[in-house]
Structures are given as C-alpha cells and as structure tokens.
Length: 222
Image 1: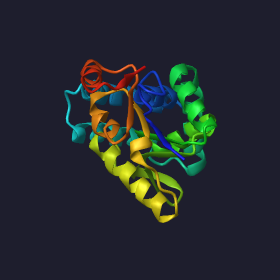
Image 2 (image 1 turned 180 degrees about the vertical axis):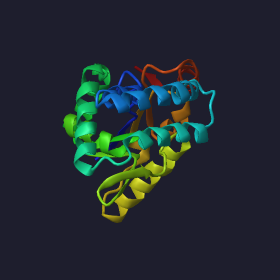
Image 3 (image 1 turned 60 degrees about the vertical axis):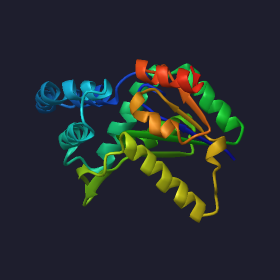
C-alpha cells in the first residue's frame, strides 16, 4: 500500500479556508457578524501575506488562534455542525484534477491522507466526503465538551513533523509506508519540505517559487 498525501488550501480546495470559515460564522447572528468584521480587519491581511511568503509562521499561528477565539464556547455538536456546513460549502470549489488523483489512489488501494493547517474537525468532515482514510490538522481543544482554544498549529515545517509522527504511529501498529513510493500534492513553496519527503512530489497549480523548484528538480506539475 502506497501513501498519498494531499494539502488542502490551494490543492484540494481552490480557495482559502480562513475566508470560508469566516463566511459561515458570519451567518450565525449579528454579534458574530460584528466579531468577524473586527477579526477580518485585523488578521486576514496577515494571512494573505503569509501565503505570499511575507509573514512569519508565528504570526500566522496567532491569526489561526484568533479565529478559534470566535468559536470559543461552542459545544461539540455546534462545532460538528459548523464544520459540516463549511465542508459542504467548500465542495463546489474542490479541484477536479486533484479529486481525480485522489480517487485513482483510493481505487489502487493507496492510503489517502489530507494534511493541512486547517482545523482537524473540518478535515474530518472533508475526508468523510471524499473517502480519504486519514487526516492530519490543527486540533481544537475542548473543555467540558466546549471549544476552549487551539492546539499546535500544523503549518509549514510542522507538517513534516506531523507526517513523521503519523508514520511512526502507523509503523507501531504494523503498517509501514515506503516514502520513495509515496506521493505528496501541494501548491505552495512553504510546503517544499513536505514535497521533498516523497518519491513522487506533485505541484498543484503552484505559486511561482514552487513552479521554479519543480522545473529545476524535474517534478510533476498539474
């Protein structure tokens, strides 16, 4: 069984999850709409700067933690319903070329893993829609069944650490993947270390820096 790892933003999803989450949150009530407007003015420009390689990881983590702050106090059922709505709204913007690759991997018996800095409960909802066998994302911390904060942000080089931890756990339970036969799909230069883990890195609609790297290394681009 081979491993096929898929980034989410810009790879499976042709958009930005932070904007998606904010749209769905803003529909809850007037108070939340005001909170979303305040958050957007303060945090979204920095998020976009990070995607362009202009912001540090720790600043992006602050933005992600602030977004979870808008969800603080939601109970488990509310969180599940919120992320289900987000996954449903995201689906029309899933990249058909990437979905075809995922479906081909699954048909071949490969393990499909969605690996992203997006929140893990959201990725779970996406994985359920797509049939992916596993997901790795940023955990939402719960206290007494209510949202209380954010766990370690899985972003940039931390994706490599998260994938290595996942592979080690799989090996402990008897499943070993050969990375020389693995596939990784991603769209941005910030995911180059993750792409280089795999024998078959695939740049998906890449930014200019990743496109140059893919051309220099003879990697596949779709």
